[in-house]
Length: 448
Image 1 (cartoon, rainbow, N blue to C red):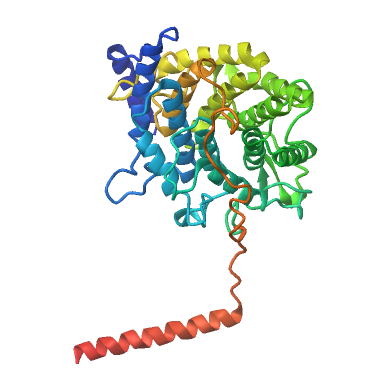
Image 2 (image 1 turned 180 degrees about the horizontal axis):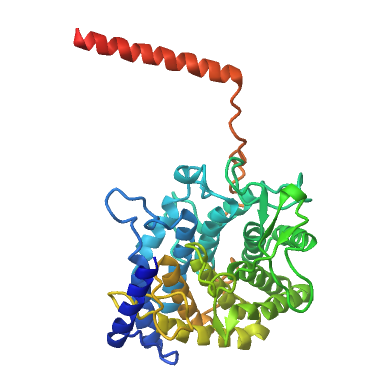
């Protein structure tokens, strides 16, 4: 591993002398050219258009949830950069993965996905609705419908039996993490509720957002004060009394932008103050105004998932600036500074525009992957956040249609583990024996 990293760093030194990603934030053409290269590099990891591969999925080791995150990034790329190169791929992916019940629990993920996994596909289609991305054909589920279905199926899993409420990390009880109530699942439910409230004008979503927020605050997943930090989660084994205090960019962003959506919709000073509190605390994710994943980037321990977190934080920062004018100076300073730094990291690989994880390294740091490309793409395109209209609603340009009961027609997806009794084992043994004897008899018959 050490030798591989050394080779990558040596390559980056020589490649960096030949290639560079030019980025001039004062030139839209420069930004379009730079982001087109980064987006092309992102799509290098897409395998869904290859023979025999699954539409919507990226190459190993990228899990299904990150694919949902990546399509959200590609919608942002289309919207901010006026580039529709990949729109057919976006449409195909978002529709192929909806599942039989149109709620983003597809059969190929139905035993492994968690609440947070489902949520990131819901966030992607919510973005499609708010950006007025091309609507699906009439015989297909619409973007708003899909976002509502994700929200409703998640809300049905609200668990009052432990910790006084909250969502568990996992949907299915047999998966590791079912005994953990993590912030990303609950924060995503809060976030979706806030966006649905603003888009539809339905205040019942505000009620849900308040319910989730209050539970998170009571469980100390959110700190109090002028700096409001967001922590990772808590275990049900001790009734959520011990909080895991890791801080991740995407958790901070979910709460920050969710509060911004609610303030923009309700004009409540409470949500205004909360937005500012989350923004003040976000400074922990910046080094000289350049974004980094504080919990893992320094010690170089970021796993595959964590290397994509900055993408979502960048997206949520852009939305916050659009929705709450008071935040714009701070947010856009961070975004612009980070975008220029990210561009310097996108100077590696054989193509010369492979992006790294460390944006204040001064070049490519030898890291590469879907998460690195997504993060660089999102921070760059969000430099245009104030040059485009903010998220649309059903009243000012959003054309996607939905259904408040979406996702509730099917049985709640929260399955118990299989209960294998001694009688079941005995019956299985008999069946196995009968099958074995049958196979043996067939072999004898063939020989005869």
